[in-house]
Picture (cartoon, rainbow, N blue to C red):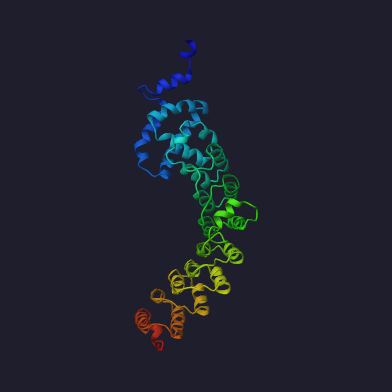
Length: 352
């Protein structure tokens, strides 16, 4: 009888079904309504100080005994506690959650661990649940590649082996994670014998990426990544590479693409460079490229009252055999009105 009456586990279960509130549960109850109206990231911002204070006042053993009560009174809390533990890298807190297997969004637990480079949390989750959905999916490697942690990417490739998509290398390139790009590309060619990586990265091509890889690297100014992809893959890029690099003012990237690639650019390159004030890039494009510009560039230069840029643009427009006479005349009248001094002693003829 004493063994039954004195059982802490038994009384914890009984207490979970009794009226009343534990004193340490009151802070969670107080934020419940406002927290559940938020997205997960914002909710964690609200919950973190409350949860950290609670963990600071109770041991993990006491926390483990409290969870049956919390799960009955605050069924949302264990899921958010799991998200928080993954984010801050507390494996002991995850292990203390009896409802971890029924967490609302298992993929969020994994994603938060990846985003915050909590490799030991990933190892715990993989050991506990295996490389199966909904914990680990083909998107897991893509998320890790975008986050840019090579140890996490390597662990997922070597130990989890849950597959992946072409987005993995594309996103790593776009965000400038050079070491991740090299690792994934090397494994796409089977350099280290990881056949599961080779299989998913080579489903329809040997490069393991799409044109989005070079386009994204160019847009964000990652010349080292762009150079590597140029030298080691044949998938290439599109005109968006130079267009976006020019728009974002990446002179070294624009020069590289002009010298080393054949995809070229569109009028959006010069338009973007001028509209965003990247004059060095604009003058380079005017001098070295033949695509010309659109009305945005002419209007922007006129509004800036920049005679040097106006002169360069008008000279280029006159050289272009395919330039629209109507567009040229409209732009000329606009600039004559905005910058009259520029036209006082100058005769400007439309392209023939």
